[in-house]
Image (cartoon, rainbow, N blue to C red; front, side, top):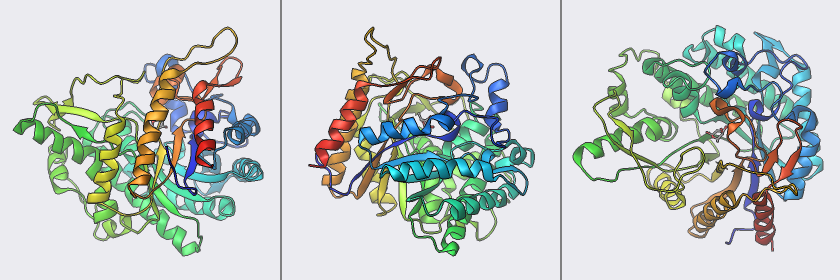
Length: 442
Ligand code: FCB
């Protein structure tokens, strides 16, 4: 594996998944707190009250990063810590990020901060959440405060993590907070999230800060096994739903008309898209973040409004049931280069969940995660070699953590967390990653 000397290796986490300290220092309720209390929403009603207790153990976690040898850490800021009510800035919450970032800098690690990794204050949801255009203003106010207070420590800004999930999983399939199932509402949510991205970038530029700013999308390449007209239609719709709906407004200043026409079956009022909005969403950014886990095999179905469903695939699968598909990772980046942009790309997430067991002598031999990591990094190194302008890679995740609707039942960490004692144990994949990073610096 070969990487350029300036290639950045990192790890990624997010606030609700690791921080805990749910009631400390003026943090207000997050939409995930309440969602976790609703029976049947999250595995065994797990919640983020304690999570990895990173809020108190960040020193230990940063030491794990230093030992690992990563150059950059991607984390997210919890909006409920920063604004505890409308117009009510909470300095104590911001202080946590300052403490954490100072510690990070003291170890020579760069910081990539995500503003929205699905952790919304309940007071914002009560005002309509992303369904309301007002939410864009609340988000921009929050973003500006973060830029102002943390600008001196942050090396990369990411406005949103995976608008796909924040819109569809939260408002269409209902798997994520707030658990709505309505495609028309999800479509509106997409628009307001994308608009808030563009407005935040504009506000950032006006403040004259220099660190690069971008967004992280979970672009997922689709495939069909039997090449028929109906399957090609299904694939078109899958790609529109998953990828073009987010890439087109960012890079082409428009939404894909076929997708909006398809969504009209669920609701025809699109008047929330105001003239000029697409120019705001298309405000130039400095890099594109790509989260990649898996390809997706689809086929035609007459049973839902989108006319596609997941197809049975014979690829090996992770504990999430996701195909292990490193070669398709290359297809994805090449497609983005061909259809969308030459901007630098950072792989802002990539990783895999497996069932880990701790050996009697306290080790975790996670060969499958090692294999997944190595095979994906090999592909990333080929991307670099091909001159595809891929400039960094963040492993998801540093720690086992709260995996949303799956609670603590899915482990993605390079470091094992014992959720009873909160002890951290580096897995074999952690040591392998360290070796790869060291090797690349020679
Ligand atoms: C991504 C999310 C991240 C984590 C991984 C497994 O979709 O961004 O928070 O849950 O999946």
